[in-house]
Image 1 (cartoon, helix red, strand yellow):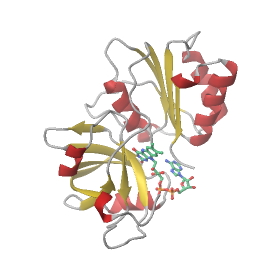
Image 2: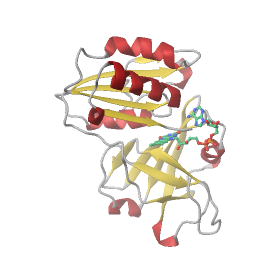
Image 3: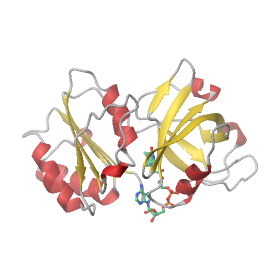
Length: 230
Ligand SMILES: Cc1cc2nc3c(=O)[nH]c(=O)nc-3n(C[C@H](O)[C@H](O)[C@H](O)COP(=O)(O)OP(=O)(O)OC[C@H]3O[C@@H](n4cnc5c(N)ncnc54)[C@H](O)[C@@H]3O)c2cc1C
C-alpha cells in the first residue's frame, strides 16, 4: 500500500469489461500496452492504484492477481472481491468499462513452479483466481489436489474457461481448525515431491503452514504460503 509513486513507474490500461460473477466478486478485463514490458509468468500480481496517482500523490494501492493474461491483445483478467468492505472493495464497485486504471509494473513472488510432481492448492475465494491461474500453468502430467473453502455457495465462481477444476468446501463460519482437519485428508503420506500453495485467509494460511512445517516436516522450499490480507 505504498504512497507517492514516481510518475515513471506508473502504468495504465483501459477497463474493457466489468461483470459481477459471484456474490462478492467482480471480474474485470484490462487492456494495456504497458503489459508488453512484462515477462509474464502465472502467479503475477499488479499493484493497482485506487484512483489517479498522477493527480493524487497519496493515492493508496492494492495488490490483485492476474487470473489470465492474453499477450496478443495485451488483455489481463482480474477477479476482485468485496468481502473486506475496505477501500479496494469500494474502488472495484466504482470502476466502470472505459475507465483508465493505474498500476505499477506487474511482478510476482507466488509464481507457478513446475519442479514437483504433486501439488496441493489451498485457498479461499479472494485467492481463487490466483489458484486457477497457477493450476492452468502446471503441466498436464502433474498430480493436483485442491481445497477451496468458503462460507457460501454463492461466492464460488468458475475458472475463466467456465470449468470448476477444484474441490470446493462450504465451511461456515470459516475456521482454521476445521479447515486443517479436512485438509489433512488430502495431504500425501510424504512431502518430498509435493508442493503446497496455501493462500488467502491469514489464520488458515498460518495454521496449515505450521502444521506442514512442524508436524509433517515438509521441506520449506516446497511450501508456498501467502496470507492475502492482514
Ligand atoms: C499476493 C496477493 C494477491 C492478491 N490478489 C487478490 C485478488 O486477486 N483479488 C482480491 O480481491 N484481492 C487480492 N488480494 C487482496 C487485496 O490486495 C486486498 O488486500 C483486499 O482486497 C482488501 O483490500 P481492501 O482495501 O478492500 O480492504 P482493507 O481496507 O485492506 O481491509 C478492510 C478490512 O477487511 C479485512 N479484509 C481484507 N481483505 C479481506 C478479505 N478478502 N476477506 C475478508 N476480510 C478481509 C481486513 O482485515 C480489514 O479488517 C491479494 C493480496 C495479495 C497479498
